[in-house]
Length: 152
Image (cartoon, rainbow, N blue to C red; front, side, top):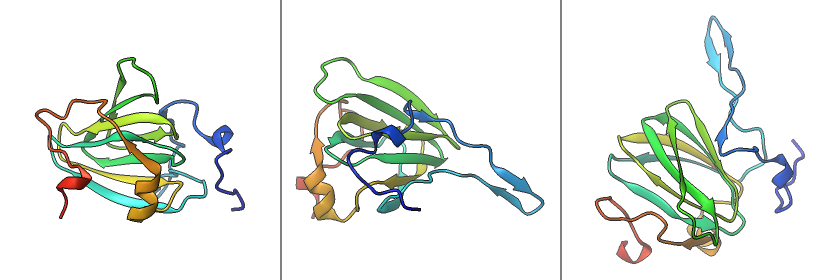
């Protein structure tokens, strides 16, 4: 695949947050579900326990697809800089959500959840921290959360 990863690739992004997946290829061996056919630099598997809060930030250049393997995600989003209440989407097992750059987003987990995140940028800590801007879009009260200063 020759698609270059660039900041000008927004014409290649899905036109909605909840991604319409292609039909899987099914035969007597099982199935193959196409997820993302784009150039990317990171694939991570994330486990979140019930009551967790993740994200509550935006990315300057990174985009990511999140595919739910098990459980569900309460996904909140709004344009960066907006004071509007965020929109909430419930992403279930077998569904995928897309987050472009410059979109405030947060994820709450009503149940134990396992999901795959496929991203434009590398996920090493230095690259990640240079691109992420943490915000307080979703209240952390009554959630299990993390801040960089709380790590050891």
